[in-house]
Picture 1 (cartoon, rainbow, N blue to C red):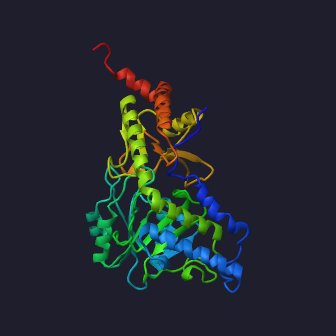
Picture 2 (cartoon, one colour; picture 1 turned 120 degrees about the vertical axis):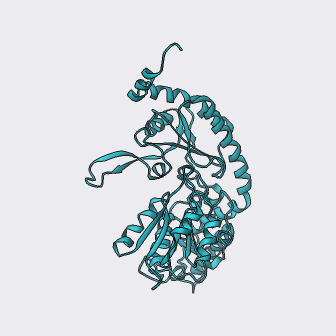
Picture 3 (cartoon, rainbow, N blue to C red; picture 1 turned 90 degrees about the horizontal axis):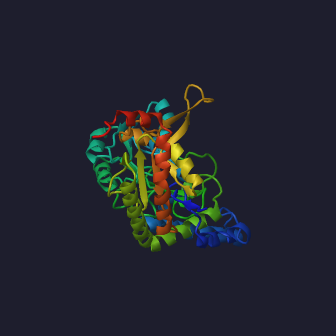
Length: 403
C-alpha cells in the first residue's frame, strides 16, 4: 500500500543534512552557551551564533534580531503578550485578523482579562485581509497589529507589505506569523515593515521544538519566562543547542533551494487541483486562487464530512489534514463536538453543510506519481461518503428525474 504524506503544512520531515548538523551537539559538543569560559561552552556559543546568522539571512533580518524559542506557539505568545506589556503607557488596544492561529488568538485572552481591548479584522471569502480595514481599526491607543503571512489551512498569502506600511505610518508595532510561509516563499522582514516575525523550524525541514521570533532592533518586549538573561534577555532558559543548530542548517538550505522547491510544488499543486476539479462534483476550493502557498490545495465537498474523508484517505495510504477539529465543549470538557474551524467559518463555509475541509500540502519529496494516486482514489471515496449521507440522499430525491 502507498504511504503518501500530503500534510507538510503540519510538519515537514527532517532533512538528513539537518540531522547531520545537529548530531555533534548531542554528544561531542554538549556545552551550555552560558558557560562560555571553557571550550565546550564556546563551541555551543559558536553554534548558536552561526544559526542566528543563518536564520536571519533567510528572512533578511539582522542576527542580533533573532530570539530562539521552543517553537512558533511560544514565539507568538512572546510577540503578542510581550509587545502589549512592553508598550508602556501608549495604550491597551490590539488589532488582529480573524484567521490567525490559536496561539495568537488565545494569547489575547489574558490580555483582555487585564483590560486590553482587541479589534478583530474580517477576512474576505478567499481568506484575505483588506489593508484598509486594518487602517480603520487602528486607534491612537493601538500598540500592535498582528496579521499572519500565510494561512496554513487555506493557503492564502496575506498582503503584509501593505499592512506593514500602514502600521509604520501610524507608529504601531506590526507582528506577522510566518510559520506556514518562511522557508517556502520569500520573506523580507524589512520590506514587510514587520517589527516581530514568528518562525518555526519544523515547517521548513528542521527539528520540532525549535522556533524563533524576529525582534526588530529597538522594539521593547516584556519577557514571558522568568529566569536568566539568555537570548538578549527576551527568553530565559538554557538554549536548545542541537535544535538551534538544526534550525540554522534548515534555514541555510531553504535560502539556497527554496526557489527549486516552489517551482516543483507549484507544478504538483496545479496537477492536483486540476485533477480534483475535473473528477469531483459539489466541490468548493478554499483560499485565494493565486496568492497562495505553493503545493497547497484546500477544498470542501458538499455532503462529505472532512474527518471521514481523512479516515478513508488514510486507509488508502494518503495522509492529509482537515479543517474540522474535535473541540472540547466549553461548558463541559468531557463532551466533544465536531465543529467547523474558525478559519472556515470566517470565509463563509456553511457549518451546517460542511464540518471540515481537506488540505493537501505537498513537500519537496513528493512526486507526480503520488499526486496521480490521490486522484485515482479520491473520487471513489467521495462517492462512497455520498452514498452514506442522508443529506445527499435527500438532495438526490429532489432532483427532477428523466428530464
